[in-house]
Image (cartoon, rainbow, N blue to C red):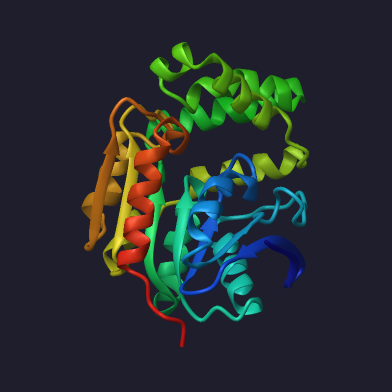
Amino acid sequence: MKEGEARIGRYTLRYVEAGQGPAIVLIHGLAGDLHAWGAQLALLKPHFRVVAFDNRGAGRSTQVDEPVGTRDLAVDTLGLMDHLGIAHAQVVGRSMGGAIAQHMALMAPQRIDSLVLCASFARLDPLGRRVLSNMREALEWRGSWADHARHSVQNFVSAEFFNSRPEQVAAIERLIGGETRLPACYTRQNEACQAHDTSGDLARIRQPTLVMAGAADPICSPAATRILSEGLPNARTEIFDGASHFFLMEQPERFNRLLFQWLQGHAKAQA
């Protein structure tokens, strides 16, 4: 596994890459950093060149309290691809990462071979907006990542998972509560998610797209999933019944199988 830093404009992005072959770019969501992709890096690196990175404002990438939008983060990601000499790639984004991936496909369609949008959205519905607002306010009011995690963790997993898997829920809570990023960067990206709206542009995203969603997700709800599925002209949708926003962790075997099969089926050799 190679670790590195890329200077993209005024920002430094921390990244890891592994493997050889067709390129896969993994974009994490509002919570967490590149470590969210640990299981997928292990799964994919024997078959692909896989890149994961910390978005600006997360992990060990540049953190600045300033306005930011999902389109800005897409520009960063395309810049990282330039830095690494990746002409085109399949892009996998979870939650906010999927919103970033949509902008990449709109801005540079020739560079995106396929998309995988996990628990993501073209625009949030009123429930999703309320959940994000509540999580942001919990962090701002308490000033503690641990308290933020305690108030937020139930939004990420289903009721059945929460009730039956206390050790895994505690691990997720520790992960969220162990954040070291500036709270202001979380607030700015939370606002970016609420402002994101590509719903009127989805018809221009012609790449094959795999949409995956949890049926019990209050953040990226079935309503938000329908907007993606019905708006994208070349989409396949997989719903994870009984799972929520973190269906990748709730049903990992199915998720990893679908992801691997999709990426294998849409891989293109690098020029």
